[in-house]
Image (cartoon, rainbow, N blue to C red):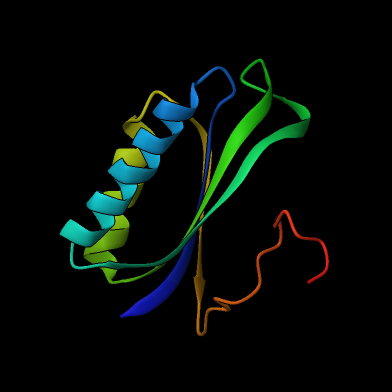
Length: 109
């Protein structure tokens, strides 16, 4: 099993209920394909430096997961087909830092 970070950017015009649905969808997808979700970070609605597909903002969701190639292939396929996703990125790691949150509300960390 390898460690991955999967960051998803959803469209800016989605409601909070829709964003929560996307979070639940990918969490279930990962868990059902021999993977494990270690942590989910909601970074919120953030501005883009440049427009992406005519959007200036996006809802960022960051998943820290453990999985294999089957899990990764299924995530890529479902993310590419999802109409609510503007961009996504998957990065492989040897170790994951589960303590640090880069976009936390508490800036004292």
